[in-house]
Structure formats: C-alpha cells, structure tokens
Length: 141
Image (cartoon, rainbow, N blue to C red):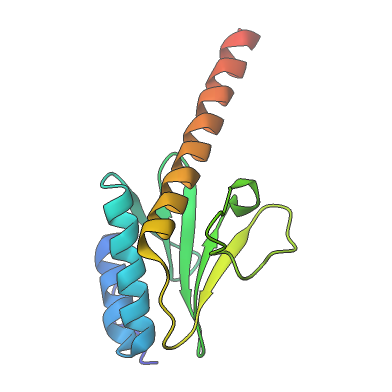
C-alpha cells in the first residue's frame, strides 16, 4: 500500500477518501462501499480520523472504525457486544466484552440492508446511553 501524502490538517472526510484511493485494490472498493452504507444508514454520521490514521464513524459516540490490512478490511463496532446481530454479520473479535468486528476478505460482500440495520442499532445504543447519562447527571444536581 502506498503511503498517503494527505495532511492531518485536512478534514477527516478527505483523509478517508484519500485512504480509499490509496488502497487502489479490492480493499479500497470494500471500504468505500461500507462507508457509503454507513452514510446511507445515517446521513448525519460524523467522520473522524483518529489513532494515527484510522477512519472512524460516530453519532453520539463511536459507531465503528474501518481498518485495512493486507488480507482484509475490518469494521470494528465499539459497542458491538451490546448489539443484536440477527444476520450474523459479526465474524471477528467475538470473545471481547465490548467490541465486535466484521472482517471482509477479497471477494466477500456484506449484506447491505443488514449492515445498515446494524449501524442504526449502534446509533440507537449510543443515543440511549447518552440520554441515560444526561438523566443521571440531572438526578445528581
């Protein structure tokens, strides 16, 4: 993979677009497709660039990260262990207490509608957690 010449001062959306372009193979296509599904599921999603070059999608907290490796694209849901996954999309990091991941290998396709439902569920989980924190803070005052 070619190193990106992108400056960290660029907006996160541009850095993510540059990462996708730099991959220039099936991984870029997969990451680009998943990004589009995330944006379709939540038009208000916030794109961030964290941890020395990791695409992050957030809404009231982290939804998921998108990492590329030599043999896969990994989408890690920060609170994936708390989410229902009726379509069985999670196939990695299944032993953790918090995170769950979807590893996409060359030639694999992720069920788009099921993935968007998972993104929406992650957002609902984040939003509910944020609302309960506000309620707890008000109760203390």
